[in-house]
Amino acid sequence: MCLDNLSLSPIITEKQKRGKYKMDDLSWLDESRFHRLLFQSVTVKRAWKVALVVGTILIAINQGDLLLAGGLPPIWKIVLTYMVPYSVSSFSTAALLSDLAKHKVTVR
Image (cartoon, rainbow, N blue to C red; front, side):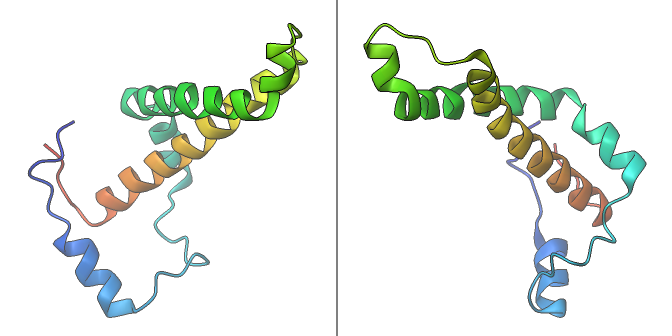
């Protein structure tokens, strides 16, 4: 997916017409389509990349002293540390794709 020829003018125009983007307006969210978007290869690949980078940084920050002392944090903490950025990235990518589809923006 290349974003070089991405036209955002329909989104910008629509946002300018409405003023501020309202988070309580979730009319763009078609539940069945959104769930499919969560498991698209582009969404999963991006989420794993973000999770590996951000999760590793968070583990170094939060558990670095324990790791340097030769200890190992509980496995549930490690899993959650990676799953939080994965979840955030998945949701934001699926939301972007859904929003682009709603405004009929093509991504080449």
